Structures are given as C-alpha cells and as structure tokens.
Image (cartoon, rainbow, N blue to C red; front, top):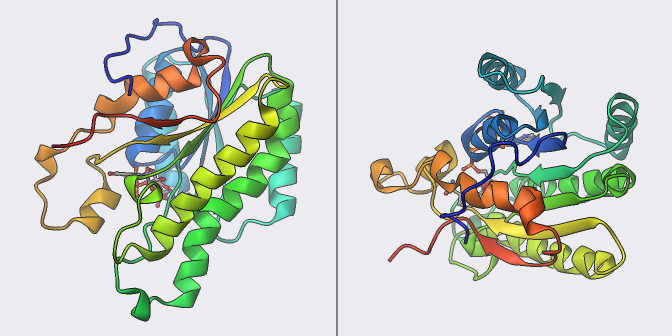
Length: 251
Ligand code: NDP
C-alpha cells in the first residue's frame, strides 16, 4: 500500500496510458490523475457522454490531449480488440500502461439463485474481455521501454465471500491470470503486470453493494490515487506479479 506516496508532478510525462471504465468512479479519478501527472490518456468505456466529460475536464486542467475509445466489454469481439490495437499502433506506436478498471458487480445473491446469463456477463466484462484485450495489446506494450499493466482486484478476489458469486470468482480469475502472465514476463520483458485492490471506495458500485452504508465513512477515488500513480509510473519499475492494496485494510 502506497497511500503516502508523493508522486513527482511530471511522473507520467511522455507516457501513453489506457484506462478502461474511465468515465466514472475509480477509473475516472485515475484518468484525471494520470493526465495531471503528464500522461496522454486513452479513455475507454461504454458510455460516451461520460468519457466526453472526463475528456473536457482533462483539457480544462491543461493535461495532454486525451483520446476517447468507446468499447463495451459485453459485446466486444477479438476483432474489436485487434482493430483497437491497430488504431493505437497507428496513432501512438506503443503503450506505456494499461489500467484494467472497468467492472461489473452482477448481483449479490445466494448461488442457488444466480442467473447463468448474468454470471457469463460478469465474467465477460471483468476477466475474459480484459484478457483478450491484453493479448491484442501486448505487442504495443512490448514496444515501450517500461510498461505497466494493472488489473483491478478486490478483497473478494483474495478470499471468497458468501453471495458474491461471479464477481468474486472473476476477481480470483484476475489474480490467477496476473500470476500466470507475470511469471511469463519475469526477467525477460519490459512489461510488468500486477493486481491492485482499491479497497472500499466511495463509488456507485460500492453504493449498490452496500446500500445501508454511509458513503462518507469511505475513502474517495481521489484518496487512493497515490498507489495507482506509483504502480503506473517508473518508481515501481521491476515490480511484477505482486498483489497490492491501494489503502490500508479497514478496522
Ligand atoms: P463504478 O461502477 O463506479 O465504475 C465502473 C466503470 O466500469 C464505469 O466507468 C463503467 O462504465 C465501466 N464498465 C462497466 N461495465 C462495462 C462494460 N461492459 N464495458 C465497458 N466499461 C464498463 O465502479 P468502481 O469505480 O467502484 O470500480 C472500479 C473497479 O474497482 C472495478 O473493477 C471494481 O470491481 C473494483 N473495486 C471497487 C471497489 C469499491 O469499493 N468501489 C472495491 C474493490 C474493487 P459506465 O459508467 O458507462 O457504466
């Protein structure tokens, strides 16, 4: 946990970073924060109006001009991921980082009642889509001399919890995939891959999962950005295959 990390103002200067689910919640905060620290951010998500608002905010604060990439993980095909890699290759020629942040909660419900279509949907958005997107983007990441790939996990991806169904299983799969890919990349690539658990954070997803909770007892997406910056930037070069937390566990 690097919540006390003090990033250099130009930490991500000249870096091209893709953020998924960049229109809202933690992804929005990460896109703004990466841009504030000098990155050219590619804003990926399914609701274009939200991405446009983040785009305007970055422009208004004088960050490098971002790019918008509309994509819905639910219907996205391998071809979409390869077309995307081709477009990014033409535009930028490389990628210095990917924050896999887009996520779907599904339903908190007893497994006996879990709808199989919803289960597939959650697996598609939270892990299968991101895996094939990563495969398509690997050549671009390898073209960077220091690329960081961050997968977003959860405490229920490290210890299972009753009723969390596909969401929990998708986050365990995320942790597993990070272990496999990190082991492949270890010592032979300039690309590193790690998992990051944001911890309880004041967003719409958290409100849906815990409707009775007072959101003001929670850290905001902005509060947890130090670890997101550390893991994306050069101060974490060499960190590979680790499971990080963006905030200390709540007592
Ligand atoms: P939000 O629901 O606030 O934001 C999720 C983002 O993912 C939104 O931008 C959403 O787009 C996007 N998204 C959802 N489905 C798709 C899809 N099919 N295709 C493309 N984009 C999609 O959630 P958080 O910010 O809270 O969560 C961000 C990440 O952090 C998730 O991976 C979540 O699992 C994880 N996390 C969050 C915790 C918390 O306490 N908040 C705790 C532990 C983990 P749109 O706005 O258009 O719907």
